[in-house]
Length: 113
Length: 113
Image 1: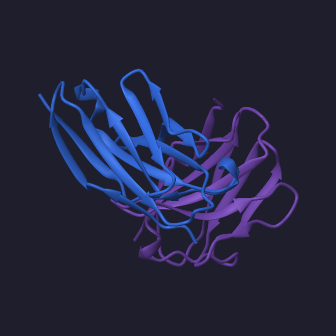
Image 2: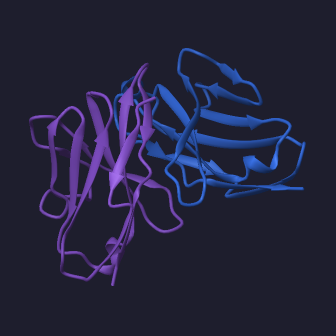
Protein backbone atom coordinates (compact mmCIF):
# COMPACT_ATOMS: atom_id res chain seq x y z
CA UNK A 1 0.00 0.00 0.00
CA UNK A 2 0.86 3.66 -0.10
CA UNK A 3 3.28 5.18 2.40
CA UNK A 4 3.65 8.94 2.85
CA UNK A 5 6.61 10.51 4.65
CA UNK A 6 6.38 14.16 5.79
CA UNK A 7 9.11 16.54 7.01
CA UNK A 8 9.74 18.41 9.18
CA UNK A 9 7.57 17.41 12.13
CA UNK A 10 7.85 20.94 13.57
CA UNK A 11 8.64 24.15 11.72
CA UNK A 12 9.06 27.54 13.34
CA UNK A 13 9.33 30.63 11.13
CA UNK A 14 9.24 34.38 11.66
CA UNK A 15 6.07 36.15 10.63
CA UNK A 16 6.41 37.31 7.04
CA UNK A 17 8.92 34.61 6.09
CA UNK A 18 8.17 31.59 3.92
CA UNK A 19 7.51 28.03 5.08
CA UNK A 20 8.10 24.83 3.11
CA UNK A 21 6.82 21.38 4.03
CA UNK A 22 7.92 18.32 2.06
CA UNK A 23 6.34 14.92 1.48
CA UNK A 24 7.35 11.80 -0.38
CA UNK A 25 5.11 8.94 -1.47
CA UNK A 26 5.84 5.35 -2.40
CA UNK A 27 3.09 4.24 -4.80
CA UNK A 28 3.70 5.42 -8.35
CA UNK A 29 -0.02 4.84 -9.05
CA UNK A 30 -1.00 7.70 -6.72
CA UNK A 31 -2.38 10.61 -8.71
CA UNK A 32 -4.01 13.00 -6.25
CA UNK A 33 -2.19 14.92 -3.51
CA UNK A 34 -4.17 17.18 -1.14
CA UNK A 35 -2.93 19.29 1.75
CA UNK A 36 -4.93 19.87 4.92
CA UNK A 37 -4.68 22.39 7.73
CA UNK A 38 -5.92 21.31 11.14
CA UNK A 39 -6.44 23.76 13.95
CA UNK A 40 -6.81 22.64 17.53
CA UNK A 41 -10.17 21.02 18.18
CA UNK A 42 -11.25 21.09 14.53
CA UNK A 43 -11.42 18.72 11.60
CA UNK A 44 -8.86 18.95 8.78
CA UNK A 45 -9.52 21.71 6.25
CA UNK A 46 -8.58 21.20 2.60
CA UNK A 47 -6.33 24.13 1.60
CA UNK A 48 -4.92 23.08 -1.76
CA UNK A 49 -4.48 19.99 -3.89
CA UNK A 50 -2.63 18.87 -7.01
CA UNK A 51 -3.14 16.10 -9.51
CA UNK A 52 -0.47 14.10 -11.26
CA UNK A 53 -0.96 15.84 -14.60
CA UNK A 54 0.15 19.17 -13.12
CA UNK A 55 3.56 20.22 -11.80
CA UNK A 56 2.58 23.27 -9.79
CA UNK A 57 -0.54 24.96 -8.47
CA UNK A 58 -0.88 28.27 -6.67
CA UNK A 59 -3.65 29.91 -4.65
CA UNK A 60 -2.74 33.32 -3.27
CA UNK A 61 -0.01 32.76 -0.63
CA UNK A 62 -0.10 28.97 -0.93
CA UNK A 63 1.51 26.84 -3.62
CA UNK A 64 2.11 23.15 -4.13
CA UNK A 65 4.69 21.51 -6.38
CA UNK A 66 4.81 17.92 -7.55
CA UNK A 67 7.75 15.91 -8.89
CA UNK A 68 6.36 12.60 -10.15
CA UNK A 69 9.75 11.22 -11.08
CA UNK A 70 11.12 11.69 -7.57
CA UNK A 71 7.71 10.98 -6.00
CA UNK A 72 7.69 14.02 -3.82
CA UNK A 73 5.49 17.07 -3.39
CA UNK A 74 5.83 20.21 -1.32
CA UNK A 75 3.68 22.93 0.24
CA UNK A 76 4.94 26.49 0.11
CA UNK A 77 3.43 29.27 2.21
CA UNK A 78 4.69 32.79 1.58
CA UNK A 79 4.34 35.91 3.74
CA UNK A 80 3.32 33.82 6.73
CA UNK A 81 0.83 35.24 9.21
CA UNK A 82 -0.03 34.26 12.81
CA UNK A 83 -3.24 32.58 11.60
CA UNK A 84 -1.13 30.16 9.55
CA UNK A 85 -0.08 28.48 12.82
CA UNK A 86 -1.59 24.97 12.75
CA UNK A 87 -0.80 21.35 11.95
CA UNK A 88 -0.49 20.64 8.23
CA UNK A 89 -0.98 17.19 6.72
CA UNK A 90 -0.10 15.99 3.25
CA UNK A 91 -1.91 13.01 1.75
CA UNK A 92 -1.88 10.83 -1.34
CA UNK A 93 -4.25 8.50 -3.11
CA UNK A 94 -4.96 6.82 -6.43
CA UNK A 95 -8.33 6.88 -8.11
CA UNK A 96 -8.09 10.61 -8.72
CA UNK A 97 -9.25 11.33 -5.18
CA UNK A 98 -12.26 9.00 -5.04
CA UNK A 99 -10.37 6.57 -2.81
CA UNK A 100 -9.42 6.91 0.82
CA UNK A 101 -6.38 9.02 1.64
CA UNK A 102 -3.02 8.00 3.11
CA UNK A 103 -1.71 10.79 5.31
CA UNK A 104 1.73 11.95 6.34
CA UNK A 105 2.44 12.34 10.06
CA UNK A 106 1.88 16.08 10.04
CA UNK A 107 3.91 19.26 10.49
CA UNK A 108 3.30 21.63 13.38
CA UNK A 109 3.87 25.08 11.90
CA UNK A 110 4.58 27.83 14.40
CA UNK A 111 4.61 31.45 13.25
CA UNK A 112 6.74 33.59 15.54
CA UNK A 113 5.59 37.23 15.84
CA UNK B 1 -18.37 22.53 -0.17
CA UNK B 2 -20.86 20.28 1.63
CA UNK B 3 -21.66 20.98 5.26
CA UNK B 4 -20.79 17.94 7.38
CA UNK B 5 -21.93 17.47 10.96
CA UNK B 6 -21.09 14.78 13.46
CA UNK B 7 -22.82 13.70 16.64
CA UNK B 8 -21.77 13.56 19.38
CA UNK B 9 -18.96 16.11 19.24
CA UNK B 10 -17.32 14.42 22.20
CA UNK B 11 -18.04 11.67 24.72
CA UNK B 12 -16.50 9.90 27.67
CA UNK B 13 -17.35 6.20 27.80
CA UNK B 14 -16.56 3.26 30.04
CA UNK B 15 -14.59 0.33 28.76
CA UNK B 16 -16.67 -2.53 27.43
CA UNK B 17 -19.46 -0.29 26.17
CA UNK B 18 -20.25 0.81 22.60
CA UNK B 19 -20.75 4.23 21.03
CA UNK B 20 -22.44 5.07 17.74
CA UNK B 21 -21.22 8.17 15.92
CA UNK B 22 -23.42 9.86 13.33
CA UNK B 23 -22.29 11.73 10.22
CA UNK B 24 -24.81 13.90 8.37
CA UNK B 25 -24.16 15.74 5.08
CA UNK B 26 -26.37 18.52 3.70
CA UNK B 27 -26.22 17.16 0.14
CA UNK B 28 -26.12 13.76 -1.52
CA UNK B 29 -22.62 12.36 -1.88
CA UNK B 30 -21.43 9.12 -3.40
CA UNK B 31 -18.26 8.52 -1.40
CA UNK B 32 -18.04 8.65 2.39
CA UNK B 33 -15.15 7.53 4.56
CA UNK B 34 -14.37 7.07 8.25
CA UNK B 35 -10.97 7.89 9.74
CA UNK B 36 -9.37 7.64 13.16
CA UNK B 37 -6.92 10.16 14.58
CA UNK B 38 -5.21 8.96 17.74
CA UNK B 39 -4.03 11.65 20.19
CA UNK B 40 -1.36 13.83 18.61
CA UNK B 41 -1.16 11.56 15.57
CA UNK B 42 -2.09 11.54 11.91
CA UNK B 43 -5.29 10.26 10.32
CA UNK B 44 -5.79 6.58 9.46
CA UNK B 45 -8.50 5.33 7.14
CA UNK B 46 -10.88 2.89 8.84
CA UNK B 47 -13.29 2.09 6.02
CA UNK B 48 -15.26 3.25 3.02
CA UNK B 49 -18.96 3.54 3.81
CA UNK B 50 -20.80 2.12 0.80
CA UNK B 51 -24.42 3.09 0.31
CA UNK B 52 -26.67 0.04 0.31
CA UNK B 53 -23.89 -2.49 0.85
CA UNK B 54 -21.32 -3.55 3.41
CA UNK B 55 -18.48 -1.18 4.20
CA UNK B 56 -14.99 -1.85 2.85
CA UNK B 57 -12.49 -2.04 5.71
CA UNK B 58 -8.77 -1.27 5.68
CA UNK B 59 -6.18 -3.65 7.02
CA UNK B 60 -6.29 -3.70 10.80
CA UNK B 61 -9.95 -2.75 11.10
CA UNK B 62 -12.79 -5.27 11.29
CA UNK B 63 -16.55 -5.08 11.03
CA UNK B 64 -17.17 -6.63 14.45
CA UNK B 65 -15.24 -3.82 16.12
CA UNK B 66 -16.30 -0.94 13.84
CA UNK B 67 -19.67 -1.71 12.26
CA UNK B 68 -20.71 0.95 9.74
CA UNK B 69 -24.09 1.74 8.24
CA UNK B 70 -24.85 3.89 5.18
CA UNK B 71 -28.62 3.86 4.65
CA UNK B 72 -28.67 6.74 2.14
CA UNK B 73 -26.48 9.27 0.33
CA UNK B 74 -26.49 11.84 3.16
CA UNK B 75 -25.98 9.79 6.34
CA UNK B 76 -23.66 7.23 7.89
CA UNK B 77 -22.91 5.81 11.32
CA UNK B 78 -19.80 4.29 12.83
CA UNK B 79 -20.05 2.20 15.99
CA UNK B 80 -17.03 1.63 18.19
CA UNK B 81 -17.80 -1.66 19.95
CA UNK B 82 -16.56 -3.15 23.21
CA UNK B 83 -14.37 -0.12 23.81
CA UNK B 84 -10.99 -0.12 25.53
CA UNK B 85 -8.77 2.87 26.45
CA UNK B 86 -6.82 2.26 23.20
CA UNK B 87 -9.94 3.34 21.28
CA UNK B 88 -9.61 6.87 22.67
CA UNK B 89 -9.28 8.94 19.49
CA UNK B 90 -10.91 11.48 17.27
CA UNK B 91 -13.20 9.80 14.74
CA UNK B 92 -13.81 11.73 11.53
CA UNK B 93 -16.07 11.22 8.57
CA UNK B 94 -15.27 12.63 5.15
CA UNK B 95 -17.06 12.99 1.85
CA UNK B 96 -15.92 13.32 -1.73
CA UNK B 97 -17.53 15.92 -3.95
CA UNK B 98 -16.84 18.20 -6.84
CA UNK B 99 -13.65 17.35 -8.70
CA UNK B 100 -12.93 14.55 -6.23
CA UNK B 101 -11.94 16.81 -3.32
CA UNK B 102 -12.36 15.20 0.08
CA UNK B 103 -13.86 17.21 2.96
CA UNK B 104 -13.91 16.32 6.63
CA UNK B 105 -16.42 16.71 9.39
CA UNK B 106 -15.50 18.34 12.73
CA UNK B 107 -14.78 14.99 14.39
CA UNK B 108 -16.00 13.12 17.46
CA UNK B 109 -13.60 13.15 20.39
CA UNK B 110 -13.89 9.88 22.27
CA UNK B 111 -12.30 9.15 25.64
CA UNK B 112 -12.57 5.64 27.06
CA UNK B 113 -11.99 5.22 30.78
